[in-house]
Length: 281
Image (cartoon, rainbow, N blue to C red; front, side, top):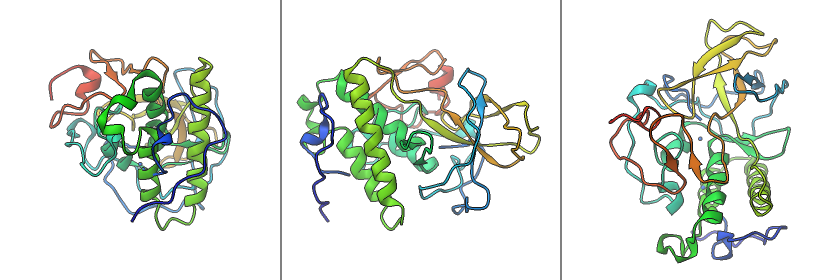
């Protein structure tokens, strides 16, 4: 069924794809199999400080998204890039920092509302911000694949569809629009985009207050170091900024030999980790 048109956003945006579209589209831990959604009311995620310099933000987080157990379903080094899904909007068929399509990446974990900003966070947030960057750095209006739904508009439509039946749908969609509006405004003013948080699960040997090497949910087959919050427990989920953050250049600097670009094609069938290590899948 056709979705109703959305109200115009409160800020003026350069190249906003939803001038042509109505409104409409989860994080990973490489070796964790997918499981039914956990209940966060009893053990909400907390904030951790990654080694790469972000300030710590300790506290508890209410989950607004329909959360599944984060993970790719197989060990990180075995994640293969799936072909783009014809039912996904155009931008979600392009490459994400994971080396997979955005459509494959957002299925690895749910998004949620960051209580410190009111923005959506998690994989869907990354997708929205990178779509905004693509709009501002490309002549997307001349690209046939974006004529019907636009760039960001298609992503938001897909997010909305994924939240059907979720009692917190309105909260999540409002947070998504808030992130989009802020990202457009920051791009217009040549300012850095908002940092995107992701969920990581502490391993059994995690020690409160100490640094810990964990699997990087953003890029399967790679690792990152986080500072375990003082009141965290092994097996608990904490929040940490994603290593690859949206940036104005449109380039996804993964630290490997291969640089990814917003809107780029995926290497179907290859190992997702190859995008990081610069090796063949």
